[in-house]
Length: 384
Image (cartoon, rainbow, N blue to C red; front, side, top):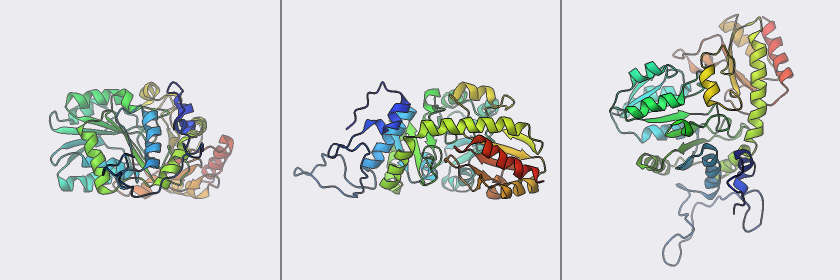
């Protein structure tokens, strides 16, 4: 039962998980539905709308509704067991021989999957600097390219791609546009409103925000045949998110707006201060006017420029690794988007094929005190 008028702001709707009140107990927190099977009616139908747990679940639907609302997704949203499960479902909906254009700089695990696995069943993949719309236009093959995949800002260099411009190029060639908006979140960027057909989130990250859920999400602009195929892939592959994880994700999204506002304020302050640090050669953050993608980011990101930044340490790779080892408040761990601040030497994770510079440290900014976060980094950098 929902009591939330749709004219309420997204912040209010998210905070109350669309205003759901349990019709039996009147609880303001929705129950977790763990059942895997459901009873048929006497006429052999399923009037409840639920048949079996692999393709569908009531708790999952609740969380999907919040994401669809945030993304203004006409087709709705689908939750998956991980961000990789969500992303690969989009590529799995293509046909052998279809051509894909993807960013040179993108989440390394998906880039590796596209390079090593997608091609095994006949998909053709080209990687291009998608922030250069001329290069993107040259890479797209009219009639052959079926999907353009963007990640903006892209991990870990935080390159910004013009979503509206890319959508125009993709659609003119007869291709769909999908956008990995993990690092931005629907609070900051809504790719569907800029012309994208599908938006993907590694919901493990900013959407959940507490480093305790592995989840992925897709939101669709249109409930067309392609979207229906993605739905069948999720069902057939058993890739749906579990009900408890969906509950945790929904809990996390209720504080999304206040969390990300605090994190972006911290990220912006740190980017400014680190730009003047003698041990930092460069700060990569779309909110800095010197960032090559700043103007585009200012057009398509609202309220801030995300919670992520990277620094290139003046002393090189060894100094970067040593800096990461000397922090105390920052946690030396992978992942991003949580309320705790994380630091990571990405080149060590991604290996020799990475486009990530060896002197780079990726920073996921949390909600701690900004002065404490800077002081911790400062002492670690100055020990060189």
